[in-house]
Image 1 (cartoon, one colour):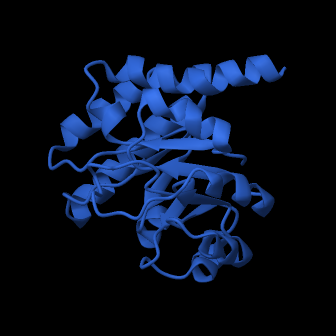
Image 2 (tube, one colour; image 1 turned 30 degrees about the vertical axis):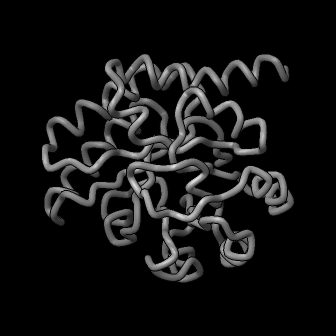
Length: 213
């Protein structure tokens, strides 16, 4: 499964109904293309709530042809038969997760370090994420990843995800620098019209495909 397009990450929310409504809006036009994945990440929820939300998102994503990736929780990813798992530096070993996930997607956060990305790919990661590329309200203290890191990382041969402070105004710059996916939380899920914002992000990729063809 080759990732390219909008990589949406759910916001923290104690309200399951509101979170699912926002995800449903984001996915409204997903069948038109330009989507990479939806990652479920909710640090405000307990285990039971997370399991219920993940199952509901699995149904939403499956119906729209968008892979669902679980953040940080291998057991949850396996339990709900998610399409993949994303791990940070302190979330467990890539190789061990690869062995249990089989052919499902496995991604790794590599911050501003190509050596971490190289090690993750060697251990079985299908894609790597760099960031924060811009100042991020979600993680204000995150290290900054320079744009030339994406150009250097093309040699790894896996999709590259950019994350951190991404907006419609700067996403095209990242794509031009070599990012296959733009990971977005706030600029998508805090938008007045989530469906329209998601479509605008997706069109950055569908229009690029049309031009290439």
